Image (cartoon, rainbow over all chains, first blue to last red; front, side, top):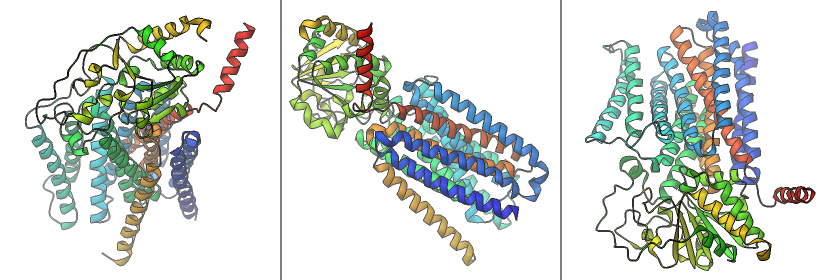
Length: 483
Length: 115
């Protein structure tokens, strides 16, 4: 009786939780409602976790003698895992967000892999389909876990340059096929009566070992610029793994939540690849900036002209419209607070100021938006590529801060350029362009930027934060006379 | 395979199809400005895996199963709690210029006059 009542309570609560997840994600379609959306989803999560303790009334006879130990283990695991991640998540800097998301993805993948491992070691699969789905979830979850750890290490700077060697793709292929083969052998021997040669537990370990190895090998050669796509793929992978293990456990809440995230991750991955004018396969299996050009890139005529920060600042103060294009250089210099201070001075002087964000600015889609939000920039001043690109031609001044490839007109005109065809912000079309840049180096892609040599473009060399401080001083220096 | 089993398989496929479609449509409506919180928010949603981990751990009957179950719950709880913490923090930062910015500037002016 108690078992039936608990099952109904769990089923009903999970149903409500699944609804709250969908409703919460739906509220993310506007910055005004998004904050309430995640709280709604949070309520669903807490309810689902609490009600799952009712499982104690439905557990297997074999697990009954271990009930107290298992309950203590569950509470300790929840407290340690949840508590630690909560504290880190509250403290971490906004610029470190991509690696945090990567590591949380990896944890979810590891949890899904763990569920699969318990099912496999406990020999709980009831049929071929059940076993195949368990193994698929295990494979995807394990790849997502080890891959995410590598992605985290790269973004955190623990791992340096991408590791590439001859025959790498062939090796990856062999490892992947071997994992599939071991899984196939496990399914074949489980129900056919053919002896598995080695003990089943050994096969399970080999299977997980190969899956984890594949995640590492697949992620090692991918460079920092492509990490956003990788994080997004692992997000989708973990979602899929969770959905599959939901099927294995007969839990529709896991199936729904996992699949929704799987679809979300897939969509985000495709959007990002589109913003870079590359295919997902191209991101995963070739390397940015190493794409062989179809000919000699067009020679760039002219010279880079340098100007003073103060001159550029004053010019913007007397402009009627300014568009700011922030890039990773702004984030690296932690200059977003100073930028907003400068923007407030311009706004006070009745200058129309807007921000133009390229879809792949920063190291994660939308990361630049978060950094600007952190500095206090209202979201209605922030515009995406499609919404603002037509306005550059009628704008007085464009200020490019630490962005390079996303404003390179070669993407529009130079067929031999590796970034040809990538949608860019039309900064070069404005009357005047100022570029804040640390030096004359190149961007992520290693391509010369034709914009910097144009007659309407002046360079302000220096660290973004230091340059912005000079600009603020220059505009303040105009004093009350100008106000 | 008997009819009942085949039916459960199809029900699972229906759930996967509809959930995938719902995810695609809902997420497709999220503007690019929210893509980072969306990624960490969907990250939080797959933290529901902790519930599966709890089920596995509570049903564990050998030390090996208990050990793996413990780590599944630990990692799943980290996924859910961490995902929520970072998403909530990010979303709290988004403000429109119509929100309380005017309010804030007014307070600042007021304080300055006092000073």
